[in-house]
Each structure stands twice: as C-alpha cells, then as structure tokens.
Length: 291
Image (cartoon, rainbow, N blue to C red; front, side):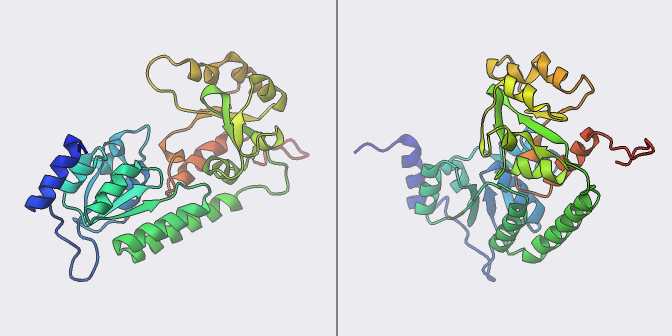
C-alpha cells in the first residue's frame, strides 16, 4: 500500500523523535497550544496564559474572518496541515467541529490531544464555548470573567429596547439570495439589536434562498447583506441589486456583516450594537423621538 509523501514525512519525524511533543506541564495543564480553526483562534487568544498559545491559523490575520487581527500578529501562523502542526510540538490542538477530519485523526493518531468546538448557533453558545475553552486551557477563571462581562453587556443592550413597541423587521440577505432564520447566530444578533427576522415570517424559518420578490413583499425596515470579496461574482451581484435600496427607501438602512458575525465570541455584541442605528425612530403622540 502506498503512503503519501506528507504522511511518510510525519511518520519519519515520529520515529526519529525530532517532532515529539514536549507534553503537558507538571500541573497537567497544556503548555503548548495550537489552534487550527478561525474561531478557536479567537477563543484561544482571549483566554490563553502568557506563552501558552504558540500558533494560530493564517485566517486570524484576515479582517474578513477575524475580529482580532492585531492581536494575531503576535503569533506564528499555521495553515492547519497535520505535519506543520506536529512540528510545533503541541500538547493540545484546538479545532472546529468541521475541521478536516483526516487532519484531526492524524494528529490524534500521533498522540496529540485535539479538542473540537461546535460552531455557535446562538448567543447562549458564546458562554458555552468560553467555558469549554477555559477548561481546556486551564483558564476557567479568565473564562468566567469574560462570561460575566458578556452577560452584563448583553443585558444592557436588551434593557435598552422598548418592549412595548412592535419590533421592526430586518432581512439577512447573502450571496445567491440566501437568508438565515431562527436557530442561527445571525438571528440572535438581529434580535439582540431589537429586530425581528423576515426569514421566519416569509417561510424560511431555518434558512434558504429568498427570491427578491419575497424580500420586496416583506418590506423590511433594514437589510443586512454579506461582505463582498474582491473580484466579480455572480452569486454576490444580488446583494447589490437596486431593489434593495428601494426596499429601504434609499434611507441607508442597509449594512454588511463583518467578522464579528462569524464566531461565538463576545464580539457578536459589537455586531448587535452597530445594528441599532438602523432601527427606525419611534415617535410618541407629541411627535418626539422616543427611540
């Protein structure tokens, strides 16, 4: 049976001992941690102790994906390949649930502990992910402090909403007209900002491809589109369709998502804060703005 060159190189390193892990510290806590997922990059940078995190992915420095690009510049980067991760001599690797499974399997086969993190589907998942990462790194006290700050900020945002008035609607409208509904992180961000999600009332409770005609009929107060990447893409053209400006009366009630929307970290609350100015002003009987 033929063995790929990459696997053969890794096996050679194992047999020679040149890439062996240094192991956990005497107290059982990991002392060399490598992250191979864009979201675990950020969790690790928030929580790791001095010198504990030795590498993050190259995506950690990409502002389209990471909310912590400046912090990430302090760390060597990796591209999530098993052989390069092995050479970093980690005693713990942080990965996503959908990280390439062959990479995860190979690292585990080499005796390296790999912990996988599920993607966040709600704001509640932020606290769960911080708790999981804090326990993995032996930094539970730090995780608890971040969770407390997150909960206070979230409560402040929710307390500022006028619960006696109907929520204005907003539509999430991404490439190819894809939208997401309840059960997603984006939906929770919308609701924390005081909006209801058009997707549910329009018959897309979990998500799906929403025709422009349906978007127009829903008449949302705001439209949130995806961030467009450089170059031309027919899939992304729909996000710049003139009808979207017409739906919002050309009043600038549109916004594009950014890195703060992608991962289950406290940065999701910044996304909610930036949405709040899109809410239409509510006026009382005297005509004064009561927003």
